[in-house]
Amino acid sequence: MHEHIIHSADECPPPGGYCRTHELNILLLAALYAVSRVLSRSLAFNETLRDVLRVLHDEAGLTRGLISVVDPASGKLGIHTLYNPNGPDLADVQYGPGEGIIGLVLEKQRTIKLVCAADEPRFLNREGVYQTDLPFIAVPIKVGGDLLGVLAVQPELPEDGLLEERAQFVEMVANLIGQNLRLSRDVQQEKSTLLEERDLLRRTVRHQFGFDSMVGRSAVMRRVFDQARLVAKWNTTVLIRGETGTGKELIANAIHYNSPRARNALVKLNCAALPENLLESELFGHERGAFTGAVESRKGRFEQAHGGTLFLDEIGEVSAPFQAKLLRILQEGEFERVGGSKTIKVDVRIIAATHRDLETAVDMGDFREDLFYRLNVMPLFLPPLRERIEDIPEIARHLLSKIGNDQKRKLSLTDMANRRLANYEWPGNVRELENCLERAAVLSEDGKIDVDLIRFPSSRERSSPKPQRGFSAPAVNPVSSPISSPLSEIDIDDPNLSEKERVIAALEQAGWVQAKAARILGMTPRQIAYRIQTLNIEVKQF
Image (cartoon, rainbow, N blue to C red; front, side, top):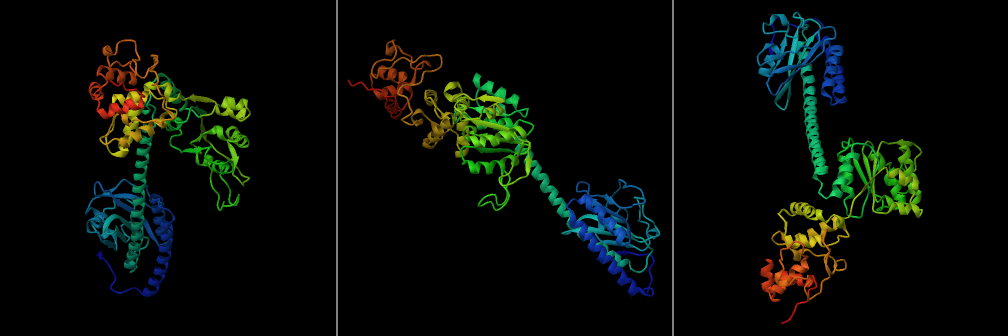
């Protein structure tokens, strides 16, 4: 539905009006096709609108094209794009509802056509670019009933009886612009949401893998964290050494996410998990047809990690021929895909890890000496858990919190359970500790983990507890007192006592009545019976 503001019009079409209408329709159809091509070329709304107005100027004879967009905050129309090649630049102009002809379109949401702009007192021409002796057309840009903006143009010639046809054409262009504008806004909003999620994930990951959040307050671990924090700032190659389960991958994560490369990918590969032929394809990629099953080209881990970090776990397990290929890319930063001849250069930081004694492997000829020196630029040694017993309680609390989140409940360890954890050698290190605690959490009905739920493989559990740091463990006789003082005088809460010594002392003080000894220790009869069994205590018979 149109609102016409026409102050002078011919009653009859001029001679030859049909021919001129036909010629105009052909011209406008070609212009409409050009507009659609411009809008389909890109979703960059700001870039395409000026091209649309240029097409209207060059091919449709509609000059001084203007597109104004509704500001959601103020509800006013702000000039977004103005095409006036020979006139002034875009002015900072706004129209409120009812202000001028453009504001009237905002208020009425209808097309307005002026035969002569000078005859309409509401025509404000705030932009200062329009000729008042020419017609003027302003149409709403609507999508789904919502007004998004206004498209205004001025025919380059005085009224010739074809203003209605031109107005209909401008309405079609406005519909195309509206669809493009809505799509552009949807894409921009989705992009903004994705960027916010990305930034949130980066902050979360950086906090999760931050050095301050890593567990371990022993002197040796603080030294490792300090070294890792220093090397994270540079592109230096890092070789992380340590037994299986000591947390080498966690240190690699912390180095990457606290480095300048944190915005790019951290790509990981366990070198011991793949045979050599697949390992080469995984690291370097392959071209189509390089081998059976290679139906398309594929990027390797080095290309995926370009600009970021590549973590090579178990680097000591790769074969001698493959070591030579690794050495080249570490030295030159270039390689060829499997089955390809094109040299590819990458910018990748290498963090390697191994539990092997590489120095001995070099001496035995199993590991290339030049590759070892290339990897061993900054070595980090992670101590086994048995050498930092003082960290076990804190690590256990951290792991229990993680397990508790998975199980949607709160988990806790008793003092007796903590002591039992500290008296084990942990050949599997932190990974074994986590498995032990998860197993205990599964067996706990109320979330409280007591000593009877801490279970180790029988083949690995020692018959006598490991001595605490700073104390020597005396020999224990199954039935006699493990200490020289009379058992009746022993303080069972003495922290220097081992678990076995405390139980024997309590049994002696209770006359070897298990129920009474359990009350002394604050246990249940079932718990003390379990300790007697697991600690190999021979019960005296009276």
